[in-house]
Length: 264
Image (cartoon, rainbow, N blue to C red; front, side):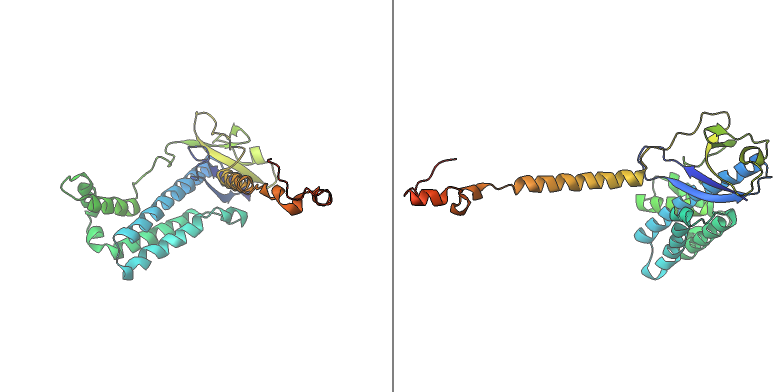
């Protein structure tokens, strides 16, 4: 199996909105089929991350204490699945597992807010409240977050739509070829790819310093500045006027000049 390590870079430099995951496919698989699967996984991870944020906010703002576990539990499971350290653990992301996490979160919302999620017309009802100016801001905010979780058609600007290609080593992989054309006959290969629009320019290169390292460097620089500031403030040289610090003290005493003081 060819291991595919896909990275989604943030739109803004040094942003924490970064994602990466693993999946795999035989090297005889059509590149177009692999690309479509990778695109679906990346988009699903974006959506699941958005669902987690909505569930956390609903739990905080408008959920009773006895029902919080219906939102917090599924949100925690999803966060652990989306964790970047799964790549280091060589754990793959799979569509069916992502779907199961999303379904569990939807079920939790239906339990907590049955009056909002019942009936076949609940999506239009929720959408109508968003456009109703007579509805309070708090109610509209609640409806928006519920929709973010239960509406499969909800999208964000990070979701990549349309036909895409995989970029590897600065080149797009033709969708009508087999993976083996690029990875060779060895089926135990790992490639690091990014998704880009078909016919578009190459995805941006990764920054020399990622967001995590950048924040660590900034924290180190700040601590260094604070330490230097303390050293300057503590640089007290008044001890030089003390008797015990006078290298000529013994000589002055012998000459009878022990009580004489000089200004620095």
